Image (cartoon, rainbow over all chains, first blue to last red; front, top):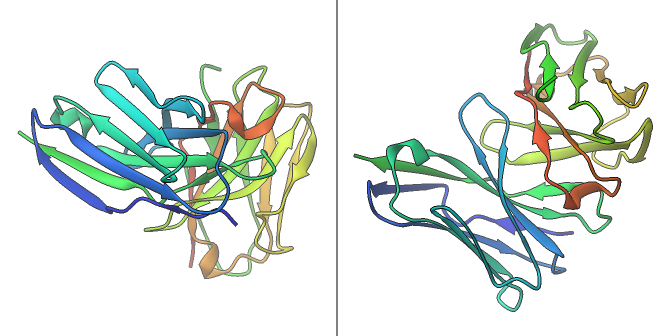
Length: 112
Length: 116
């Protein structure tokens, strides 16, 4: 079965720096990969979706890359702000295409 | 409504009791999902509805768990004879496409279930 690893449980950076979060998966390569943000006590919120034929996708200060050879996605937040502090979740489609498989997330803390 | 809503927001119950958790998806969304999030764990898929049918219920952890959806809208997740290991946040999500997980999923705030 598909497994997802987000290799840092926690990441602490200073305001203004670029945060880089990693998502690795095993087994089959998904057609899509998604990133979500989750704040304490709330449900995840969709941020970006990248397809297998897209190497990179950007949205404002966010950038996602998808390397199907390495089976890895990188999620970057440039010019980070304390408001970016949250848990970020990587998610892939299951093989049946009926649900998302989520990583455990990386908790980002941006200090001012 | 504007988003996915869930009720109750918190539920405390005694071991052995039955509980019902409710999800109101975004109006018009055909796909509905239930996930469970335990402390320190990732989101665990439970069941997927397309309309009123559940083509994938492979994530339900035991036969004490069941879910239904009526009118292509509201869904109820029922846990019978609750156990302490059922304590978790139960999240519901909906999406607008007819084919499952490739679409953006919109999550509700979750129901925090505590089994004493």
